[in-house]
Length: 380
Ligand code: CAA
Image (cartoon, rainbow, N blue to C red; front, top):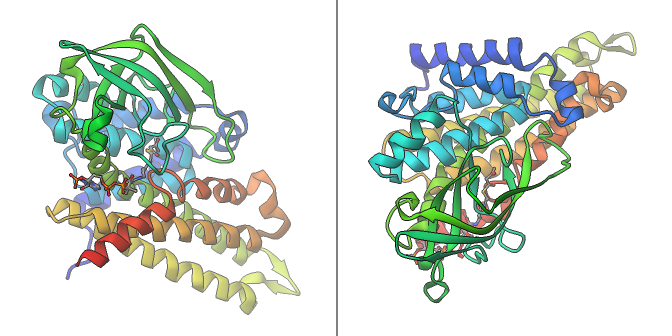
């Protein structure tokens, strides 16, 4: 078993680390405060190839493996989880879904724009009454021959306003249950497509989260992804890969908070010595270090499974479940180590603690990951 990263992977990791320090760190507190979308930074990430990392170069992508993607997600998330969720949704939910299941025409029309960062994508599954219970879609896509008529509301959509290409999951035939669900490509500006209000969130405040409203939106049939009724499986399969992205994000948030806490503990003095010399602090750092390393192994294993053609539904669920718990625990402890300074914005860790929480919720809550994991181990 070889745990060594390749030269190329190390280079990409370093590029992401440099980008995070030079381009994401300046202004991250202000963007969080003002709920400001990092438009300039996203444009630069497109130029660097971070927006379509796993996409075939013939569609404008970087043609990299999932491990490289996880490395980039970790480095970006150490500094700015708002920016990294934009990258994650675009890469693993939108680009990957289109490349894996789209037609050649769809790839040429949409994928190249998405993987170069000229367009941003959004993945629209959740609804006011269909979050975890994703088969209960109320949004309808009525089949009218050469087009579908789309009606309904989607909630909590990442990149809700900044996107211009939306993958929308909707029910075509209720009598068929999840087998009557389709995935449609919807473009911003299609008549009847309205961007709803922006959510005022606890964390990842630099990313824009909106509800979306569809009023008799006419979507051409050629915008359907896969065969009729493939929409739910499309969503599930795509989310399995998405969970590797969010697990990497959680890992990055944890690692970023740990690095800040470690540095602070060697500078801050109490009772005549650096606080790292007190066992109460040193043991916290030891626990954080072990948990982060364990999360990293689960994340890399899931990415490796995907790269090697193995099933990754189970490993991605385990990686997300564990890494998101580590993100939460580590950031709480990082605030504690910083004491009063941890409670104010200048030291970053309070933002990381707020950002960590969403990793236990989106792309399948921790409880949903336990459903996926328990079903998988029980059927063996
Ligand atoms: N790959 C392929 N097919 C899959 C699959 C997978 N990973 N998981 C399930 N399926 C298939 C099943 O095989 C089944 O098909 P058949 O009947 O043909 O066998 C079908 O899908 C329905 O599966 P279930 O019976 O297991 O469905 P369920 O109602 O019990 O739900 C669930 C399963 C795992 C709970 C699922 O509903 C789920 O994952 N829910 C969470 C949804 C979620 O992650 N939402 C996140 C929103 S997106 C987001 O957050 C993006 C963002 O902006 C950041």
